[in-house]
Image (cartoon, rainbow, N blue to C red; front, side, top):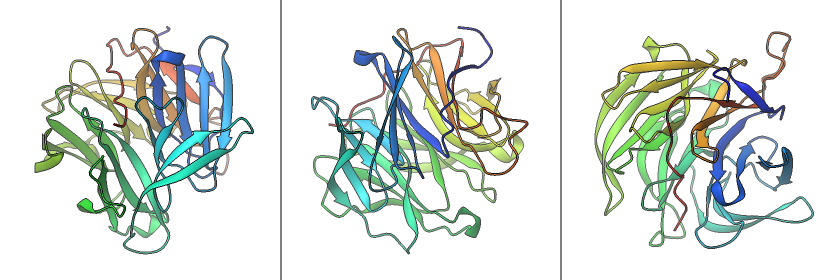
Length: 298
């Protein structure tokens, strides 16, 4: 793996998000939110498969012991989605949500180390800057109607958990906020507390987007608009920044046979792309460290 970013697929995703490495398949899954697609790239043959659903699909986690089944935050709630042979996604509701207003959907999400699924919501008109977003948790004890665990976000993002599961990270990537917080996390009850500022991204290049945590407990966050992926130590110190050849990296995930590759999805904005023709692509970086296997939904 070269130290510079390697294009693995010119996906031209409108909003490529939520990459998840599945070791058993040696494959990377991710979503393209506005195009309502789940995608899979297999390392062995460099092939990509796409499935399309009826709602926008924003974040995913593999379901435990259920074959190729996923839990997904979509527009109206959290669903189980199953890729079909005809290229469609079959979706079954797991829990619904009463959004604070119209025009909202889920955004960033993932499982904690115990297999609970966490996902945040946002107003789709990001330019409106409305803090109607909330963070939700779903597990085996969840009601059919989700209840917000944290509130008052414009664009909740950057969700991650420390290796021991006892720290939860969360950001708000809206230009008016651009902060990352850390919370103490009760692994027994799945409850965050003691919110504190972890990193003020106004002091670094790029807005905080999707994130991953490595085996050393360091926090990797995509610097959207800056073409960078930053690594912060557990005490909030910037350790390194890796470049990608697009302006809007969206989310990163560890994968590969030794979990020593950092995959990065990206956004393809409208307008002139002559200076970033690969926008919307998926890239691979050599981060110099190893990651952690992504927890499955239990």
